[in-house]
Length: 250
Image 1 (cartoon, one colour):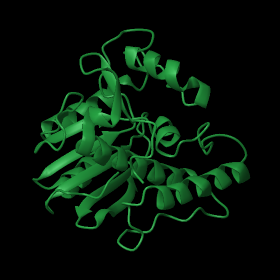
Image 2: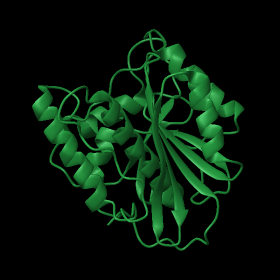
Image 3: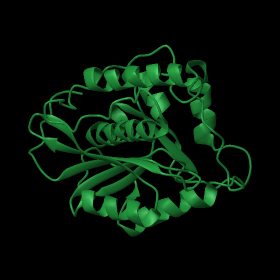
């Protein structure tokens, strides 16, 4: 990502690692400064009204893009969406395939209701938005695929499954990649990313770090849209935004 050229303004990029089954969600907001992007707020909430209230407060009334790690558009009753089929063809070899989303899955109504609530707050779907559009948009993203491309990795950072020690090690690796390979998230200006605990549950930290990735993808999409990102699927039946595989961010 090259140095920002837009004049400082109320540009906010929000990341939501959504709890598909109503579990806590990781939330992050990134805003612009002359030097680049900085992490403004990082938290984890469970109640839907609390999440929507946080989004309203962080987005304010200016330009905002929300990137959500969850299927926001589902029209197929069974099977998988075209977006997932295309993603799996591209990313399965990196161990970054997608879970199938259809209207028969138990999470479907939760994630669709969340997208509808965002629409009520003025966030339109942004699969076809123009770069640096002065509007408010929601997009679906996939953090695993994004890390493969943004960090030029041979496979995903495996922090989701396995023994705790291995997961903690991979989370530390991902945290380090975010702070060193996404330089516009200036550490001197940013809220510190949560440390990886030496004991106890890792999920709260994992959710928040995923939210940071989501928010960064939101910014990457807003600045360049299809020039430096891919859209798998389409807005009508479901889409996923992934930064292209080159270090445009550093």
